View 1 (cartoon, rainbow, N blue to C red):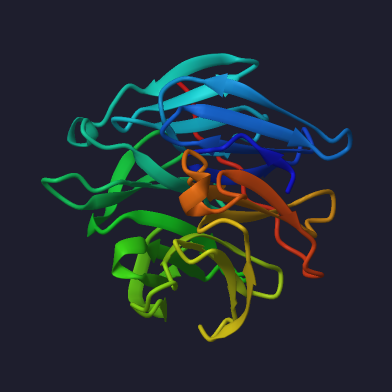
View 2 (cartoon, one colour):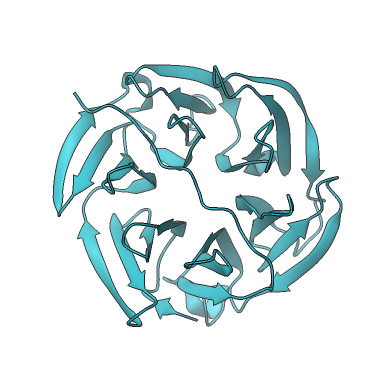
Amino acid sequence: MIADYACVTGEGPLWHPLEQRLYWVDIPTGRMFRYEPATGQHEQCFAGEPIGGFTIQADGALLLFMARGAVALWRDGVLTPVISEIPEERESRFNDVIADPEGRVFCGTMPTGKRGGTLYRLDVDGVLTRVLEGIQISNGMGFSPDLTQFYYTESLARTIWVYDYDRATGDLSHQRVFACVPEIPGEGVPDGLTVDAEGYIWSARWDGGCLVRYRPDGTEETRIHFPAQKVSCATFGGPDTTDLYVTTAGGDDKAANGSGAGALFRLRPGVQGRPEFCSHIQIK
């Protein structure tokens, strides 16, 4: 365990290559934290509206994806609006985002009582496109090492999908199942994910208390258990991307969710990760 801020929904860990620090959020409380391995210091660095996910811009600023479909740039403690809201998302919020190799951002929203969630693509020129609709909780995303496949988690469908990915256009096609989580007590549902250098997928299990490593063919290779029922997301970091950081949730009720609920963990599984891509969204 690295840090325990008793996060209600600890999520979205992301390694900042310029700062050599890890950032993560607690979605509903609107808190953001960072950890510097070189010094062992960690701190809360932001508090505001709920943050569903974020990317790191090429210049080091953070692009925050928030409630109501709002997007804002956070630099040196100053928040600059980029998109004030998406009218269709006024009752929702973003949930998990990822930058692609060209600097676009795939960003999903939560379902509401009226309709399912949506996966959007924010292009570098600021144009927002609906990619998928009617989603049962948009969640973890990642790219295969050869950048031809896109992995996408639909939590309540208990499914990790895989698509053909066109790097030139950002288009997704040929949807098929990568892995399904059986509806068995204790298995939970798939949440955030990351892809390592060998092309294996690490998927967090909300209410499953573990992190599962899948082979590229979708079969399970191993799982790592945590003292927290709600394991939410994972990312590789560190100078050589061999540190695996894992966020958890449920810190508001540790009695029910485990002693480590809401904490940030670090593993060294002997596997190398791949640096996440930076976003290149043009701020007008």
